[in-house]
Amino acid sequence: YVLYSIFILIPLALVALLPAVSIVGVRIDTFMLVLIYVVILPLATFLYGEYILLQRPAAFAPPHIPERHPALENIRTLRRIAICLAIVLGTTLALLGYILLYFGNPYGIVSESIMGGLVPPTFPAVWGITAAISVYCTIAYMPYKRIRDGIKQIEIEFADALFVLGRRVSEGRSAEWAFMTTAETMRGSMISEVFAAIVGNLISLRATMQSAIFDEEYGALRDVYSDRVHTTMKLFTESVNRSHEAAGVAIVKLAEHLKELQEVEERIRQGLYDVTSTMRSTALIFAPLIAGVTLALSEVIQKILQSVSIEASRLPEEVGVVSIMKDVGTGMEQSVPPETFMLVIGIYVILMVVILVRFAGGIEYGGDKSQFMYELGQILPFAIIVFSVTTLASRILFRSMV
Image 1 (cartoon, rainbow, N blue to C red):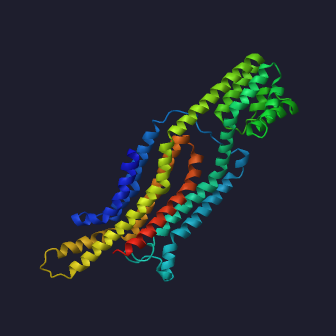
Image 2: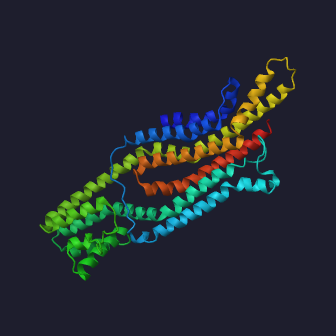
Image 3: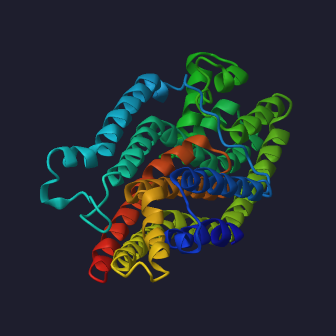
């Protein structure tokens, strides 16, 4: 909650007050704004989030999926396509505001003054960055996500399959028969396909148990990147050669242990659900919502200060507040143009979404890069939609009040 309140809500709330600090003589230029909202605050938030993740209980490491997996045969080409699409789409969207200005700003969409138009010319740049990140993450990491989901499903089914396998082996039957009946019992599941492949290797290729399971060319587990499954099957191959009965009992005990471990992991996941759901809700809704409202408020304050400055300039010079009010009204406008201000805050929102998605994912599934990148590609566009709609609605609403 320290991360949520101090590192997210307070910086977003302060956005609305930045134009008003000129009243007390503090000038915030573009460099300082970028330094605070693009470097210091995101870096501090990221480091504190990583510190919290270091306290996370140890669990199974996420699977490492190499590029030699059959489903990743064209992954490098896919990445190049994703990069090209991201660059083209991102650049086009980023320049859209200035393109509209070049063609005469049809329908007054682009703002050319404070609280004018719908959005400043730099606002589409936020969507350009978002589109580039989302397109690349979705296209380049969707294959990894599918493979990871398949491995996760195999791990879930593995404990039940071990129960059946252990019972059959403890009856003194051959390993081929045990795998065959287990595959038949688990028909329709992914683990059934793995066990059926083992049977095929044992019968058709006359392979040894070790080769049928682990061979790098035709082994049934060659594309199953799960330490849990590999370690258990290694134990099985070593013990089944000594005694079927002992191996069967050991496998059943191990299946019970894996089942208990899955229950513990599920309880931990449920216990952390409040934290992860809060972070995802913040990234998806609350942070963009607050940023959109406060950004519009900051423009309202800037407009008010500008109006005050204009009215003060009409007062006689002998009135002492004239020069002060002129400085107040123009200080923020001169140092940070409205379009730059909106771009910086938009980038800050994007960085916050990235950090929060990373934090929530780190708690739930550890340092799984492919899961994080794919999830980021899905969440970021929705978060920026919330930010965009809120900003537009707030500007339209507040414009009628100024």
